[in-house]
Amino acid sequence: MRSLDFNRIDHVYIRPGYTDLRKGIDGLCLLVQSSMKLDPRQNILFLFCGRKTSIIKGLLWEYSAN
Image (spheres, rainbow, N blue to C red):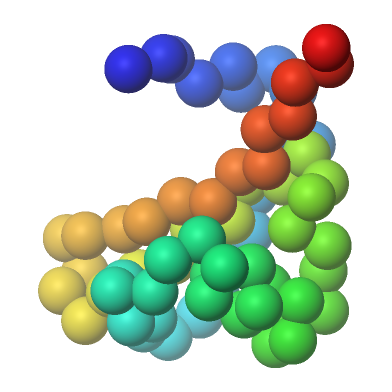
């Protein structure tokens, strides 16, 4: 497991309310685009909370420059 480089993150957004954490990457990207009106491919960390507030899921676009 790699550690997260917080220096490259421009913003952190927490989606209000609860999110079905069974959603995969594609489903979470659709939520970011449709309800938050943001581009999930930016240097933004998106955090989602499930019904149990002790569990969160994060979405961060990582790209590799080959």
